[in-house]
Every structure is written in C-alpha cells, then in structure tokens.
Length: 553
Image 1: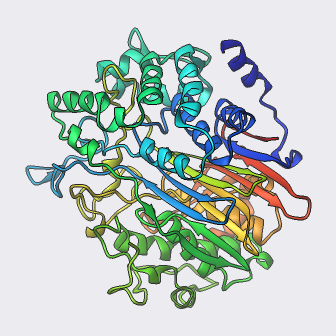
Image 2: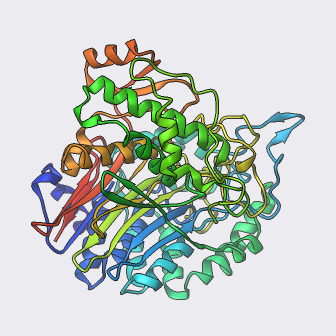
C-alpha cells in the first residue's frame, strides 16, 4: 500500500482536465488518493455513488483538516433512472443546546462555538452516506471503508497545503492531548513530506465496516464521545447520536438560460442562493458585457441574495424558509434594483412572494462523480473550519466538527466567515445550522451535463454560480471555467473580494463603479464534471488553485 500511495502521488499529472475525456466514468476531488479510491471502486464494479463515498471517506483520511466522519455532508444524486435524491447529513445541535449557550455574563464567547467541547454538532456524515449507498449504490459500505482504513493505518505524506494549515492550527490542537498525539511530534506540527499515520481512525473505519453505522451512532463511538464530553464540559450525549437522522429533502429546482438546475435545499443556503443569483443574472446579457460590467452586475445580485440569506435562511424543520426566494418573478423585481452605472446600497432583505405559508420542508471539501449508466453525484462534506473543533475523541482518531459556529450564536454576531444571521438560524436543540454548501447537478433536455460544487465558506455559493455562467454563457469547458478569475460579495461586510488576476485596468473600472475592493491572490476550491452529449464523453476538472486530481476511465 505504501508503494501504491507513492506511485499515485508521483503519477498525478499536470495535464489540464480539458485535455482528458472519458467515456465510462469521471471523478474530480481535491486529493489524488481520493480520486484513485474512486477509480478503484469503479473498477471493482461500483457506480458513481459508490465511488463518491469511497473518495469522500478517503478525503476524511488525507484531507481530514477539512472533512471527515466527525462532520457532515450534503449529497445530491441524479440516478440512472432519473430519480433525484437530496440527503441531508448536516450536523445537529445536541438536545441540551439552547439559544444563549454561548452567552456568558451578557457577552458572547465567540471562541466556545469554534474550539472545544461545546463547538460540535452531532455528526451526520456516515448516516447520510450509508443511506445514499443503500438506495443507489452497488457495493457495501465495508467495500469503500476498508481501502481508506488502510491508508489511515499506513500513513501518507503531507502536502504543502495540509502542512501549512497544520502549522497554523498547532496552538489550538496542542490544547487537546488526543489531537496533539496524532498531529504533533514533540509539540511541533508534522511538516511537508512527513507521514501522517492515523491508527485509531483506521480502527474506527474497520469497526464501522464490520459492525455497521450502528457502532458509531448507537454503540462504542457514541459512548466514548459522551464520556469525553461529560468530562470536559460538553453537552453531547450518546442519546444525541442515537436520535440523529439523515432525512431526504426535496431538491431546489430552477432554470438558467435553458438549463435545469438541481441543488440542495435548506439547511443549505447555497442551493437557494445559487438559484436566486442566477435568476437575477438571467435578466442581463452578461456574455456581451466587458469584464468590469459583468463583475458589477453579478456582484449586485450577490449582495441582494446574501441579504436575503442573513434574514430568511435556517433549518426548514424550525424556520419558515420562503420558496419565493427562487421564484423568477421575485428575481425580476430584484433585477430592477441593479443600476448598471453604479453600485447600490442594499439596506436589508427582500420580501419574496408567498412567504407566509409556502416554505421549504473553507474549509469543507467537494467532489463529484458520474458514470455512463447515468448516475451523477455532487457531494459536499465538512467539519467546518480547519481541524473543526480541534478535538479528537480519544481512542477513535475522529476529529470532531465545530459546526455550532454556523448557527447565529446571537442574532447580529458574525461567525468565523463574517456572516451575520437572524433568528431563523439561532441555536436550538436538534436543529441543523445553516450551510453555504451548494452541491449542484445541471440538466439539459432532461439529461445531466454538469456537476459542480466548491469549498470555502460563503464563497462556495459564488464559486459554483461563476463556474456555471462560464460554462453556460461562455461555452467553456470546466478546466477553462475554473481557471477564470473569481470575485465574491456577501453583503456584509460591504467589500468585494476579487482576484488580482483580473488585471489592474479591470479592477480600477470596478472600483470606479463604487465597489470597495478587497484584492486577493486567489480563493476557493471548486471541482466540476461536464458531459459532451454529442461526443458522449465526460470532462472532469479540479481547481488549479489547489492540489487535486480529475480523472476517469
């Protein structure tokens, strides 16, 4: 296995995804070992669903600072028979959670929702993936768990990205002995090229493979988690694990220039707002705009949508989330607010139609798979910010999420991504926090042609929609679209994050329209697969800003 890992890493090609197309199967992930896991699963007779879960479980080993079985996920699946399934594996607040749990002496303890025993929701990853595989897969969960367990046991060399994130997080990881024992050596972080071995995580994967997810949710893992939480000031119990569910939810469906979008509903805000922004943008011929005008129009649409996000979005089991947010008529009214010559101040949320009763019942990583049978998967998974809560449950190797910070710890108080929420996203027992994850599948004439999604907090939404405009409006292949410069505005703070690669002239033109620029050398991590219906070939692509691999057969 060690020799195979070395071979896979060395064989990772610099070839652009546009130069590679495949007739049978395609996959794009942020790590070559995860991509290889998907390819091997397909070779063993698995389909796109099996391969996606195999790759995701491998990412929990080799990209564990971003996601893992101690976190959650959203799956959007378009099966070969045309059925669409959206599975909500978002973490849930423990039963003892309450609205003011992070308020101490009248002040919000912002660190408590990010680090330590109070930062974690109940993980949903394994339950969601198990449900997806039972419904649409060909293999068993053990078939995709055991290869990932072998990588965890034998170890893998850290790449530059992992090593840098580990170094930046060392002071917080050092607070928890079980975390330090894995990620630090003599108090210092493992460096680039050093082997990260996770024997406890390997044992956990093997236990789930042998005994099923019940071992995790109703057995030893849940008990170990409760023991550690109770001894360290936490509130999560074994009963919280036993009560966790991963429900199927009705997909968000919208249209853009003759294409049909299928994406994740709340508690994902991403699907709603990818659709809302594209609905607004459709009123403008952006293909014919110069760069600065195109940036301006899409930015104004972003601001309007993120203002709605702050007020309206939350767990649909607790909050009334209006379907009118994705109503084309509502988008038409918002589009009228955009001044082509100057930026507009967005003072607050809009009022979508039928809101009273018609409701929806960077961290992070994204991968997508597709096969010739017609199965497509878009999978977002996360433990929230880097290394989650920084807590590894002793004896398990499982790094717990800090997803509680995605709630509005108090309405009006920004989270780690500077996002401000309202009462709809306040903490409550059994509630799921709002997420920006936006796994999306796009159809043309009823057939899937694009899968995409991203990592990077609220920029997930804007990365996905920008990629779609480049493919649909500009006719680009995914690799070309992913190489295009990006920009992001989330209403609050009032700044336009924009990549410097647009060039000084364009940046000055955008600034002249009234935007407050925050130039960036680069951000995000987006993956995509495109299917050419005439050639019957898949074109997978990974983001050139990060390590990763797109491949197929």
